[in-house]
Image (cartoon, rainbow, N blue to C red):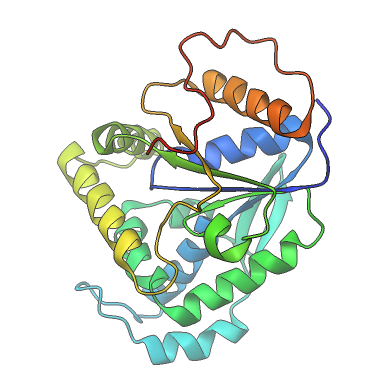
Length: 248
């Protein structure tokens, strides 16, 4: 399927599979994938390692803000994926831990952190043909994006997905702890003062609570075909949610 040079912005709640979905879209259409969440996690890891956030999530925002201009976070293409580096160190494993997940939302509320991440994303997105996932990509970072998707799923289902992902990496976690983290992040992300998690007015909602990734790919191909005038996918759409700007 051929599509024009556009920006695809994917926003939504934590653990809805935004990153996995965005990666598959990028692979399918030959786009560059940018993981905004990885950048926020990278900043959080830096804050943790330099004792700029404590166990009560109190942040030395002044010190962190002063460090950001010199913080070298960047993506490196490896094995067909973009991996996040801090300087010459790959930090993909560290930033996906529950310890970082528990602190990333408070860090992401800081205006100076959001400005740092937004600046990096806009620099990378200038070339277009990019798919970017996050919390405020379509509403704040790239309001001009030609295609915006807002992803959601039931909290319990998202917690199960997150737990399985973490267990697959060898972490021992309890469902109750993961679910509590999911709900806490939802609240913090939706209530922060700067660029809160919100659905852009022109975003298409995708509730993937009971969809496989293959079904989601059929959904996005049909959406792109309808939006940009290409032939739809050959997949059977029976039972899939229709592209819908009103459901939430």
